[in-house]
Length: 134
Image 1 (tube, rainbow, N blue to C red):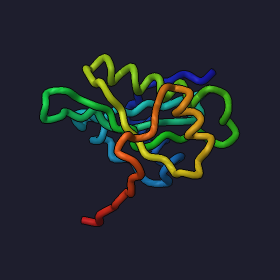
Image 2: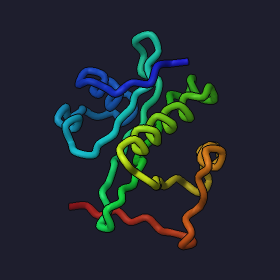
Image 3: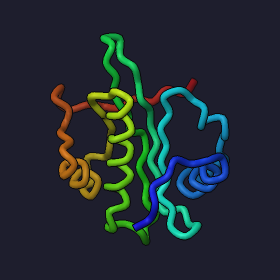
Image 4: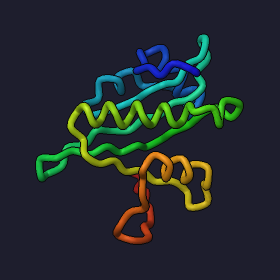
């Protein structure tokens, strides 16, 4: 099983290149509330997840998982589960009481994973995602 770690600037650079095909911004690691975990196996970046611990106006806080990815040849080995569990445990330790994420309706593998971890569909019914270019 790969090790799940909080990345330094070099590991962040490798993960962003691997999973976003982009250049990393090392200052991201200093962003308040940012949570990032990387799965590494003998110097190979095999998975990652990132998101945010967000304060709420009522004094509570929640997690937002923005992305979870595992390299194709490493899938179905428990890596995604370990990444999400680490993300959740980190947020719980920081005081978060809820977590949300979005996934494609047809992404049955991801939905099975989220269901098996105790996640449930949003109570407000069907949702639609919007993106704004700023």
